[in-house]
Amino acid sequence: MKHIALGVNIGNLGRGKRPREPMVSRCDRINRSLAREGVDLRVVGFYRHTGNLVLETVALHPMEAANFLSEADGATWMAVPEETMRKAVEKVRKIPPPEDEEGVRWTPGLAFAVTKPGERQHRLIGQSSPPVNRHGHGRGVEAGSNHRARTT
Image (cartoon, rainbow, N blue to C red; front, side, top):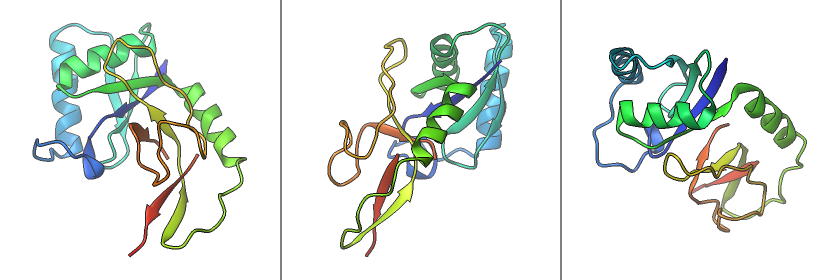
């Protein structure tokens, strides 16, 4: 089965202090670590430097996969079943875009509130639901609801 993993502060939007590691190298490193530990989990794809990964496992549930991935990588990850992500994206596509706002360019996207591994708390964030504040910033991880980017 496949899960979609979303990393916190990974890639081009990450605010971490670690230098950016190319995703090919990072995924290879993660897979070597998982294989060394005998974990039924592999990174089989990624989307550029966004921190969005495709995971494959025979039996691990998303929370278990996120925990193993976090341990192997050293960063915080969450995971959702591929089908759950597909359904969430389809729901978001049906949400009308927010009204225009001066200095803001709304872009389509999906955000999840992410906690540390082992804490089961992820949910779809819509246009106005917390924890995203009025500037479109929050504790979420973007996966592709409407969020906005400031234009200058």
